[in-house]
Length: 81
Image 1 (tube, one colour):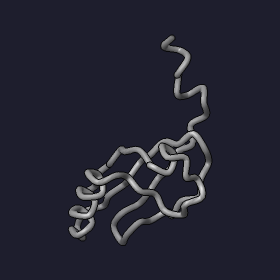
Image 2 (cartoon, one colour; image 1 turned 90 degrees about the vertical axis):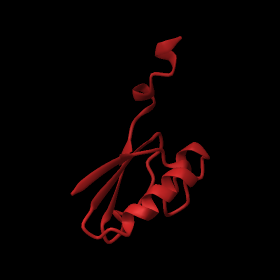
Image 3 (cartoon, rainbow, N blue to C red; image 1 turned 180 degrees about the horizontal axis):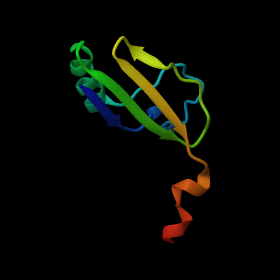
Image 4 (cartoon, helix red, strand yellow; image 1 turned 60 degrees about the vertical axis):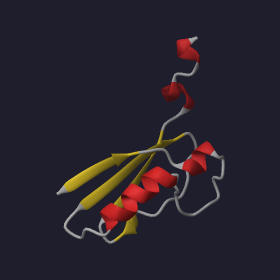
């Protein structure tokens, strides 16, 4: 079974772009830790960032990480004003 997990990469949120691995906060980390222990699952974590960062393709044997760069215009901050 495949699971898509959409969450924020806290490296972008905390502006720590030089860290080699993503981190997600306590709640998503706890859910992912439980899911990573089930080998029959295929987990794909999807995260959007404002800065291009190097990220590992896999976080564990059954967990892939997809970091998607979205330019500033894609965040529409000023569009709501």
